[in-house]
Length: 233
Image (cartoon, rainbow, N blue to C red; front, side, top):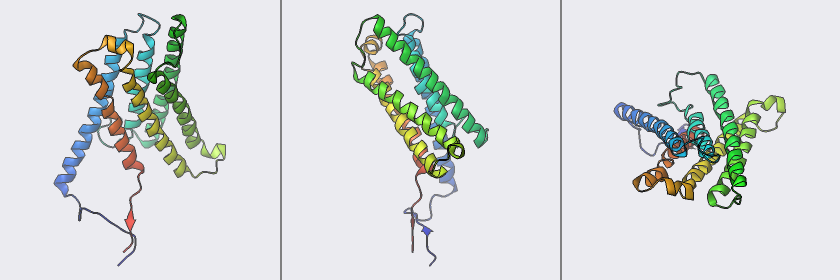
């Protein structure tokens, strides 16, 4: 028998009907992730009422950066359900760069507003789990951006790592950054401001909804970069 035959534990695999159903389920899942990201961002923006205080701009900037732009910057590479499916791979990479640049700008702006707000109010910095996780997320986002630069300018920087491995590192670290950002957003629901603003079932919705796009993003990255195992006969 020939070697390196791809092994499937499910026999001959799904039929055409199952392929069609799975494709539509994946598309529906990605579209739901888009809707959840947009819904969470708009809801947090309305709750923050930007302009009413120095602090109000912090949740506004951070929700747009991480809940919306970072999510869209990853999901645009999805084959199913992406509004950017008509773009070429090169176009998607450029759009990804654009989104991630906006993430950095808005994250830095949001950081400036919260530092300014707490300084004016004479409140201590890094005094909660949310603030500590937020600082870690910002640092990880900066490292992820540096990794992206290494991927794009591999030849110019004369790096010894193979491009394929750099892309794998970039995707893996990007997933970790996104999951860390999701945990930070969830931690924000336990802050004094949020619990004073949102109560009852709405609080539970804000607690759980950010987890759904994270599951879709995690599934997309794992399926794209997890190597297929082969068994030699």
